[in-house]
Structures are given as C-alpha cells and as structure tokens.
Length: 624
Image 1: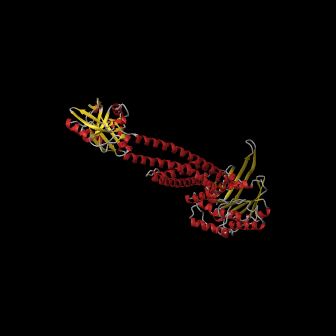
Image 2: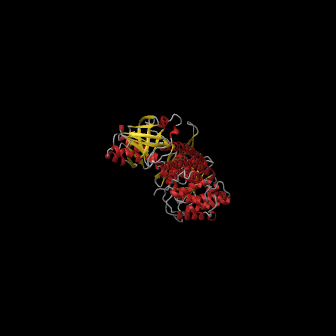
Image 3: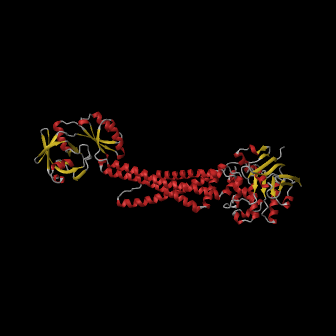
C-alpha cells in the first residue's frame, strides 16, 4: 500500500534578478504516513516554510515530485488543487491567519462553507471542533479578543473542519509561551492519534523532541531523518468530506459582511449610484408624464388628432376609397364633406374669387386667432382674406357681412372670426361656414364628396396615418401639428437628459471599480487565507461580483425611493397648480432602473474580481 505522502527530489529556487537565483531546496526526499507526528527542524531560512507551502499546494513553482496517496500534485489542474487544499490538507500558520471580522465559530465554519455540508451540521461540527481545542465558550468572540495561544487553537480547529488526512503547521508554537505551547502540542498529538499525518515546522529542539519523528533540514537539504517512537492510532476521526464550490447563500453572506465592515464607504458608493439611477428614472418618468399631459391637452383641442384628406384638383372620393381610409389603424371617424373651389365673394364694393369655401363641424373646426365660431349664417375667414377686406386692422371685419355666390345661389354671412390657416394655400382667400349652410349648396347643385376630415384615436398615430395616406397617393393637411412637434421635443429632451443621467451612473461605476480595488488591497491576506483553505478562484471572483451587485441593488433601491419622493412632491404641486400630474408612476421604469444599477455595478466589478482571484496565495498570506 502506498504511503500517504512522498517527496522525491524537491528543488526550489527564487530569482533575485533575471539571471541571479537563490537555491532554497536542494533535492529533498522523504516519505510520511498516517499516524506520524513529524517535526521539520531547522534554522530560519533553511527552506522549511517553503517546503510546507509546496506540500500544502500553495506553491507549484518547483521541480521534483510530491505524491499524495499515489497521485502526483503536479498533475492536478487548478480545480483539483483547490480540492486538495480543501479536503486532503489542513494548514496551520504561525501568525494564525484568522479573519478578524468573523467570530471564532465562523472562522472554523468558513472552510466547510466550501464543502457539501448542511448548515446545521456545519455549525455543530464547528462547535465540536472548538470543544476539542477547549474554546467552545469563546465561540461568539472575535479573534482580536483572544490570546495568541487561543488564536492558534482556533487555527487548529479550522484546519480540521473538512477532516483532512494531512495537517501542516508552520511554527505553530513559535510565538507562544510555554503553557500555550504544551496545550498546542497535546492537541496536535491527539490529532495524530485519530489517524492523521501531522507535520510541523519548528526551529526549537524542545518542540521537535515531542514529535514521533524529526527531519532535520539544513541549507535546503535533509541532513537527518530520525524516528523516535510510534503513536498508536486510537480512532479514525471521520469520513472524508467532499469539496464543492461555496454555496451562493453562504457567498452572499460573506459578501454582505465585507460590505458592512466598510459600511460608510459602501453607503457613499451606493448613494453615488442612486443619483444616476434617480436621474435616469425621473427623466424617463417625466417624459412619459409630459407625453400623457400633452395628449390630454390636445385631446380637448381636437385639431391635433384631425387630418384633412383630398385628391389632386379636389377630385371626388368613391365609397371604396372612403372605406379604405376609414379602415386605417388609428382612424376613429371620417367626415365626408365638400370644398367649393369656384365661388366668388362680395364685400361692400369689393368682389373677387374665393379659393376654398369649406364647412366646419361640431367635432372638426380650424383653430381661431380672433373671434368665435358661430352658428348658421356665420363665417370665419383666414388672415389673408381679412387683410384683403380691410384697409385698416383686419379685426375690423369681425361683425360685418360677407356674401358668397356659387352658380346662381348667393348667400350672405356674418364674419365672426379669423382662423389660423396653416395650409399651403393660406395666402389665398379661404373661408369656413357652418355645415348646414354648405349643405344648401351641396343639395342645390348635387355636389359630391371631395374632401375627408378624419379623426385619430390619439396623437401617437399622427405620423403613421400621414405616412399611410401619402402611400395611398392622397394630399393631407393637418390643421395643427404642434402636438406632434411637442412630443418630438419631449422625446429628444428625454433622450438627452437620460444621457446626462447615465454619466452619473458611469461615475458611480468608476467609484465601485476603485472601491473594489481598494478592497483587494485591504483584504489581500483574507483572500490568501480563503485560497489556502480551499476556496476556488471562481469563489473569490463570485464574492467580489456579489459585492458589486449588492452595491448596485443598494444604489438602485435608494435611487428609486428618492425618485418616488420627488415624484410625490412634484405631482402634489402640479395637481394643485395645473390639475394634472407631470411625473408618471411607472413600475417598469423603477424595475429598469434597479436592473440597470445592478448591471452597471456588476460590470464595474468584473476586473477587480479577476484581479482578486489571480492573487498568489503565498504572496497574499505574507501581505501585511
């Protein structure tokens, strides 16, 4: 049966410059098995700690072979190496390497979060391990509240969490007093008795003498390998625990804890993101509200949803053509009418031709500039017509009589108003009379339909219907296109202002990017600890991505709350002053803002997360 751990010709060098190197390990060969308590004895700088890093899977830059249960470590891929550190080997460090913002219980539990262990079982196991090292009563304390010997016992408990077969301890008693040293060594002996291999690095002959085997290293070479006694295995501690990635729930808790540790900074970043989100959502909501307001205003002034349709030379419309137009999407009403293009007028001593004599209807009439629209026997004329009739002010014609002759019929009307003529023929003499007055001409001369007045369901159909009518070859005239113009300006303004708001989000994203990079520097050692106890690179990446996402969620929520507050306040004012609400309450925009906040934040967190995951575990653990 193969031994548990074998080293074959291990060599390791550090390059001081590109050409100058320092040899640290020079052909190390040794075999170790279960139930051995091995001391790697030697002075500082002889290569002991480097050897422990190689055996622990933290350092792969060496030559030679490390074989564990017949498997070569060099053949492991990244995931298999992470799994090796997770389930096969437990590391104990001289300076403990505990995560200070976690309780003692959580420090022991953290390595099991990367394994397939139920949360309740995980917590119970952590408590059992703390009881094993005599610290159960301190479970809720932070590492800073413990002595050095107590911290080392926590590190031992953590190393046992996933029941590894190998425990590697780097100077576990180097910084402890004699009493604490004895406690640690007795605990390590009990671990050996459970059927594990324990290898400790020490420069103390006194400590080495308590081990069952002493391997002395000098100048990177093993100069002696002495077995002193055999430790009887009393039990096998527990079944092997299978490694798995950290569960999303546990990773979320870890990320949230990290943000809470820097809550002031995290809050400032979230507020920065919320400003951009609030700006974007408010602008979109305001644009939507203004569109609704414009539609309401122009719904009361029906000219905006009305289009005049004619053919060349005012040819007659067949019933088929009328039906085709009536069936267009957005058209709700079609009025069939007649425009007389060959009438004349008489006004005092003036006589001349009239370009167009049309009819107004209850639901279709031009926009007045002056005066009013009367009933039967009244007429409204355009500015050009009014100017021709009066040498003084055109307003002087209001209230005077004007006669129209068509064929043999002449009728006299009272001028009651002047309308805003925006048609191509506005420079000519055009007039509108009541529909009943026009029907007198129609009935007398059997006139056919040569103009249609169509009404749309709302102003959003203006462009579509105009395009459809143009495609059918008809001439169109919209008496008032200001509604569409206003909507176009609102749409343009919304896009521009949304872009300005988006700049705030970009600034916030840069803040998140910088904050996460600062966090990497602050937590370099913590990242090294997590990697040393088996965290995969993707676990580290996910942790930082989760933190970025949480900042995004916080920023989005704060931004939406601010948006709602501003919306309520603004609408309260406009409801009183304008009898309407200008900013819409739009759940879709709120959800879009929240999603956008998370998306931008995650995007900003990708680069820092990759940087954190790529940290070298050995260098990270040395960082102070």
